[in-house]
Image (cartoon, rainbow over all chains, first blue to last red; front, side, top):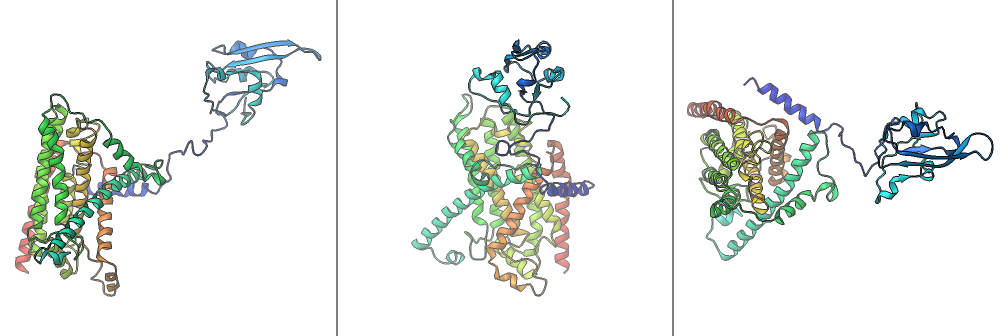
Length: 139
Length: 339
């Protein structure tokens, strides 16, 4: 008998819940907005890179391969090739932390499924063309 | 249609009745399909999600897709199962559930029978389903099925007694077991039986919930506890028959509640003068509205309450519902004798 008020309260609560806003997402019909700090695949700004090789050194899985050549116009080095083996990149963000010139940054792009494993080997051209939704916050 | 029942049967009326029976079967099957969809939607909304939305517009084709899947599955019969009983059990469970729909009057003109023992037929036939469920649990040769079947039989038998006793109050007041007569008595009284027989109504609601093996009384088919109770070993079409049984009982029980306690096809609030215009709306619309309200209550309750334990369930039936329904009956009889 003493359970009756609790029971009615429970029914009232579930009835009101029917009209609350739903907590499900309509992905993939609607795009899923990620917060600004979300770490997706990297973006490379080729002109800013000074080929210091710090990102290659710090990468925990050693997925970055860099080839540099002496700068034909002036001092220092410029990039000849920059490859990220995306099969083993863990998106840990350490390469962006150590980069002194902010040449390499993370973006918010996570829709990266491809049909062949060859396409997972991201080269310099792909990384510099990947310039949407770059994460510039506190990199 | 009722007039045909009071005349000698001709070939024409026989054909028409057969066609209407087929139409009723189609309507009941359509109801089952869309009550499953509606249940998933309502429970989804209560749980802050959408329910089926992808298959067909607004997810309306979800249940037909599920039924098609069930129909196309392989028919597996376990090697050591008792084959004739295994095949018989779903049939024995389903046939009474559709048969009892014949005694329910939908409006004052639409109805398939007009007997003076309609309520007795209903309660008696719904007992055969218990046998089908017990048989399914035994014939599966599986300890979970046997446990589920036993629990289900115990639960359904225990709750049949308060079910019938709570209705006896209505019968004592109306003086007849004829369902049509009960609705007409409510029309004479001016109020529906839910008002004078409120205790009987609440007991009937709880006992009907247990009869239908629905949450919160669904331990026999507890999905997370007993695997699937008595329909563990059934797959494909046989499982579809068990599921159909449960939902056709929802149709039959809800219709019975509407007829007995909520005034059948009568418009509401007739005791308020000036609302006579409500009688212009056809009776079937009132029946449908009340029916939808009762069905919504079952779905709402399913999403709200957790499951009862078996011993709590049995204690509740024998120690609480039975004495209260007996007291209700005695009080009704005393008041009727004195007034």
